[in-house]
Image 1 (tube, rainbow, N blue to C red):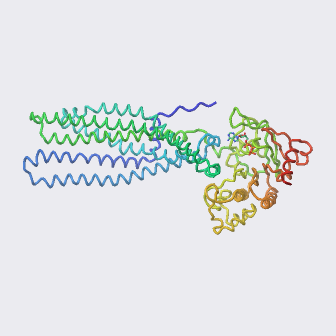
Image 2: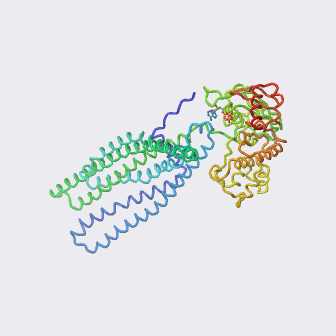
Length: 585
Ligand SMILES: Nc1ncnc2c1ncn2[C@@H]1O[C@H](COP(=O)(O)OP(=O)(O)OP(=O)(O)O)[C@@H](O)[C@H]1O
């Protein structure tokens, strides 16, 4: 048993993000440089104000008004110009990082083993890709853009103040330790709750995704109300979590502002006292009042950054948990064979999706070169699972499976899967055109080859009837087609792949009698020079098979040809009697 990895800490997530941003260091540095330059320019105005109050006005130097005003205006213009460039750079930086991380996450997900997906909800995965990735990048962007510049501004302002007047500076800085402590307490409280809010968002999206994909079932069972309650419950959970976060923010933000303003009032009172005593000029006090704004404004900005960082780090932990998953499939580890004979053998194979619930027990079966073997058995007996093992979507806990005598783990998965044309029980089509779906079988296929495959799969007629032909849209999961049409397109895809081993999982169950007959003829042609493993509930489709294996509760009960089994297996005889009676009815 493997232990669940320890949850990532905020600082570990931040370190990972910085490592990730390293790939974009040039643009990050440019962004930081622009932000620093913009920050430096804000100190011009307070200096100009002091110049006016302490020099230009008392000394009646009207000749300096234009020069001083021009200087202040130039500083403002430069600052806003830099702001324009900074915004453009930020946008590029952010979008580059988001695209990069999103690409990595998608790549990783597509390579995770099937068992990983058994324990994930689609809504959760979608939330990670669509919401968590951008939130993650806000950490870097806001961290550099807002966080670094705010810290820098606080530091520079503090130094400017100290150089100008140490007494006043210490007075102004007095509330800052309390503000820092407030920020720390707030972060500790919010961090786990921000993660919980993200999880509630995922759960809400998962419910919504289920409603959309199951809309036909919901309507046919008039289960709209039931789904609505489920959705509202998930929605309420999210509302509660967000409300608690916002309540904390509502208290935190004004408390910190109050502390800052208390410092401002203190400065005004003490500064006025020193002015009255003649220990300070009014210009110095005014300069300080403006500088205080430059000190407290970034502090309040840091509170906002803190909020973004905490929620972004919660998102980052969810994203990194996937990126760090070590169970990624290596498609290229292992050998490839120069030629495939197509002999498949299972030897004492035992398997369960969970260790405590075996599905297949001691399975041994063999498909010799170019043979057709059929697997029959009641629903849930483990037929499709045999194919899941042959494709190495899962690996067995015991026994071996070989292709041409070579154990599957020795072959590269890319090679193994290229030798298998697998027509799954559910004829899945991707949103897109008929052509897009067929090219999955052979990306380099010409239109003539596509039409030939459609002809073989008895799908040519309905595609030709469509005005757009190969460019006809099939809709999400192929909803714009009938079940039979979907299945025939899936078959055409397998014909195009032209692999040495064919795996058919009830591929003919949704086509009409006439099409089924045509498909059987085509399949017979296809099977002539390749090994085929066929799962079919309808025995009529597999009576010609070289060997039929009867599976019952994950064990092989009997094997032989149709005639042999009719003699030797009472279980098979019963199945055949039922099947052929139904067929005759
Ligand atoms: N991903 C999975 N995780 C856990 N258990 C699974 C998974 N897929 C299938 N099972 C279980 O394994 C058993 C065998 O399933 P399998 O799909 O191989 O049966 P089957 O004989 O092909 O059934 P059918 O004829 O209905 O397709 C069933 O009890 C099923 O619940």
